[in-house]
Image 1: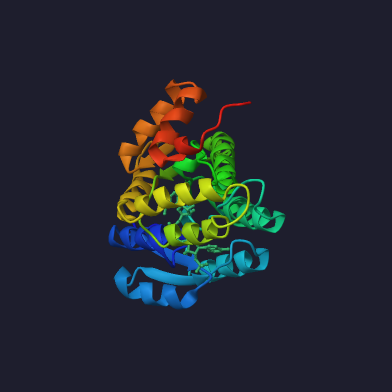
Image 2: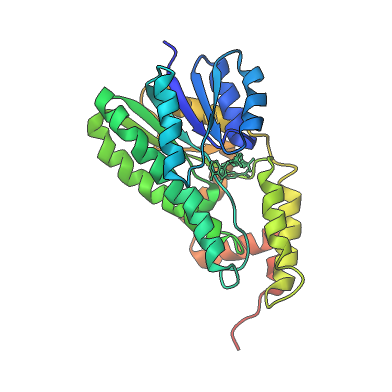
Length: 282
Ligand SMILES: NC(=O)c1ccc[n+]([C@@H]2O[C@H](COP(=O)([O-])OP(=O)(O)OC[C@H]3O[C@@H](n4cnc5c(N)ncnc54)[C@H](OP(=O)(O)O)[C@@H]3O)[C@@H](O)[C@H]2O)c1
């Protein structure tokens, strides 16, 4: 059976790789984002199974129009992959309130709005899968990542509630947590950090953190590892509540769960070089 799935944020990176992977696995994929020209280019890679849909997850009217388009195409959604996301990096103290709001508008309220819009259909059918793209940052919050990490912590919490609320309705919910993945996201994060590395009270720390971050993204795995995890969440008879991609990141999560913060803080500081900036209380 060719099941239909909506993938948000499909014009780049993980969403793009997921749309193509799911199309190759036989899904009918509605690939959604704001940059429709990028989605039109993606169509050619999907063997006739990818339909581009213009969608801004922060705009209720846009969500309504996109879902009407999918309905007019005769599809009933079996799956929703909430992948669209942005990353606002910088010190918690210095990131502007507008930027804080922009982060949550996309990663949290946008995800909630799209989910709420598809749920009546899924509940009506008594079946469906929702896959929320979280992040390792939804469990481990690095410094200068507080804005983004708090949005991904929110995704973890709301996914737990949703999973429990929807279980009696036949709709299953999973979180896929990518670690560092080599996509344009890394450049976006570097640019965001640039604003804070030359002046202000955190400049030296930001410079050190940014250098570590710059080394991480290019050497990270490509997005196909996440696309495979999404496919598992959509097709397993009993999907896990959480998938970690790549699985080697499970080590970092285990460490976070097993050791007290005083220990993990020291370990993570050594990894990213911020131990050089540590000052004990006067
Ligand atoms: N790359 C990583 O290391 C990493 C790690 C952990 C988690 N993640 C998560 O994985 C997801 C995808 O990230 P990525 O690495 O693939 O980033 P990316 O290459 O920058 O892609 C982000 C996607 O989100 C879409 N998007 C942003 N704002 C949107 C909006 N308002 N409405 C609709 N679409 C919107 C963008 O499309 P348009 O601009 O065309 O709308 C784009 O397709 C995000 O949720 C991110 O938090 C990434």
